[in-house]
Image (cartoon, rainbow, N blue to C red; front, side):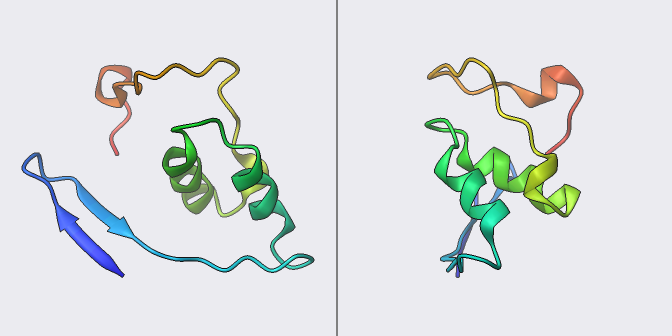
Amino acid sequence: MANEVRANGNLVITVRITLQPGRDDDLIELVSHAPRGALAGLIREAMRNGSAGKVSYETEWTATPLEMESLGIEL
């Protein structure tokens, strides 16, 4: 596992995960259908909610990431 703390205080963690069909089907579905650039956010939400089935996809994705602080959401 690799860790990096950015100047703004964000902790960036890089991990490698092996997903097994039959056991991890919900996570495989989440990863397979994640819009480009949205995977990390979707995985964070799945970890918070305890299930990938509760994570919703953006209906329209842009190249510009959302500023979560302006939405009142703290990451």
